[in-house]
Length: 336
Ligand SMILES: NC(=O)c1ccc[n+]([C@@H]2O[C@H](COP(=O)([O-])OP(=O)(O)OC[C@H]3O[C@@H](n4cnc5c(N)ncnc54)[C@H](O)[C@@H]3O)[C@@H](O)[C@H]2O)c1
Image (cartoon, rainbow, N blue to C red; front, side, top):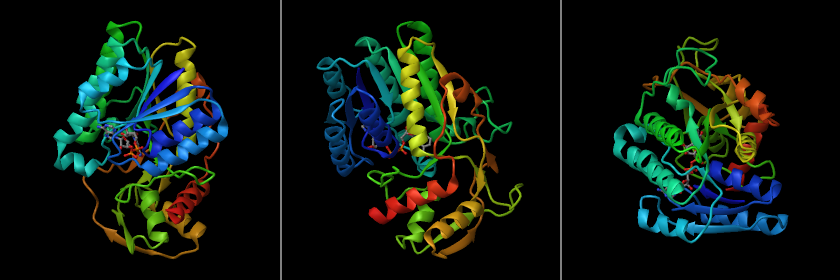
């Protein structure tokens, strides 16, 4: 198949492209404006494609906001499936600049869906987020748990989900899988690609940056949450396990199954203190950690119920080990 991957030069998209190139025979067409994605990542993916000698890889540098340019790409190609990763993803920025998020995430996704419908692209896999649940009303969080985003980022994704679902309800030839990711971390086991965005706010990335002295210190935001050690607990998932969920989801749609939504996480979590202790252990560096006030909108606990994806897709994580997640994140940080 011809698979269009928006945001394929970014962190998660590149890990999925790597697996498509190494484990399937699909041709991959990346569409990215390189706003947070990297040419170096594309070069590495090109090497992986050459080495694996399976599907081809092509790249369009284009901005999803430019509808005319994107439509030309649909006119000159035939896509069988869309994997849509491209988005703006920084929660505090979404509070300061909500329109950036509604435009880049919701409006651009809507335009892409319109093109899928007009040009007969019948399969879509969408990168959604646990942020659609806001401060969840139950733990572990099920797909059916109430959706109540508490920031524009989460709302922009929930609105995109609604557009996808309503479109599919009206067009039986358009099928989707929505994947709601929990906390994605780590890097390619072979250390060829990883998270390269220097201003990332993700805890494990920040801890790896502090362990390698790219940052002089890091903060723990809040120590009086209702958790055993008082710090927030999150469900960290290795990016290669998340990537394999996309391959499974694509197979599921290709087999003619019905549209659906899955949580993607490990179903258990670690506290901020445990993550920092593990990063210190694997790096051997006792880096400086400060204590800072709680941030608005950080729920104490966020853990997925992943039984649906395990049962329906047969998805089995391979790297469900905080040490491996921290080791691979650290190895990548040293590399860059
Ligand atoms: N990283 C996480 O922990 C996490 C958690 C939940 C959901 N997600 C979702 O996963 C997806 C990928 O996130 P990521 O961490 O890889 O982010 P990323 O910033 O590394 O990747 C996003 C990619 O999209 C590209 N892009 C952004 N806007 C674009 C536009 N208008 N036109 C063309 N290209 C554009 C960027 O250049 C980049 O390559 C996003 O949709 C995000 O909401 C991420």
